[in-house]
Length: 248
Ligand SMILES: C[S@@+](CC[C@H](N)C(=O)[O-])C[C@H]1O[C@@H](n2cnc3c(N)ncnc32)[C@H](O)[C@@H]1O
Image (cartoon, rainbow, N blue to C red; front, side):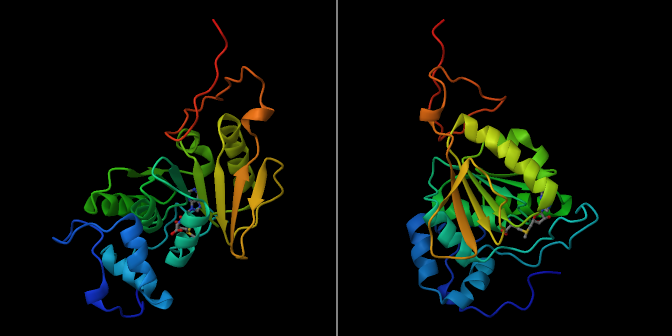
């Protein structure tokens, strides 16, 4: 089981993040400031305690060969990512391989973005949904399935997060689907510990970290035909710009 062996944290310094106790929900700048006050090596345990997280389910047979088991991403990486990608309340943040929902919940609390977690392991999806329900986060939801195939959920996103869930053909299929989304509106793709194959439609945003790379899509409005209406069956997200239509 995961989650054991975390460093001890001073409980008096933990800000309650959910309605499990009477203390108010810490969000946005207040939560970021609280985390900044916690020594870096204690932040993960601090968040686990604040979210009331214990150990998460073991990986099961639903994890296909070649796909990466659940390992929660470090809080430090999520702080860097959300700031660098300028994730905000109008975004739809899609966690590709969401595990037990820890990153999804924390990103929502930090940024106010709607979050959709895609996860192939049913036990982890259940744990993630329980977490969102316990913390009363109605804008954090989870979809069970093989992420590259979940085109409806992908179509809703504006920021996509990949903490190395898979590589090879699955990653290629995912990127092909994201390219279709990027044909409808600009998106950002953030990869942690995951080198992407060359993608002509993605441009890295310079940063000083070797582990976290943020890309912006380059299929901009200027490059599209004047009367661009092709949605590829994709619904725009809350943050998308209105698309031009042909005069009738
Ligand atoms: C390294 S963990 C990342 C967890 C989470 N994103 C985080 O940052 O805390 C990778 C996750 O991807 C999930 N996963 C692997 N292959 C997948 C697939 N084809 N579709 C959906 N989820 C997948 C795994 O079950 C695991 O939970």
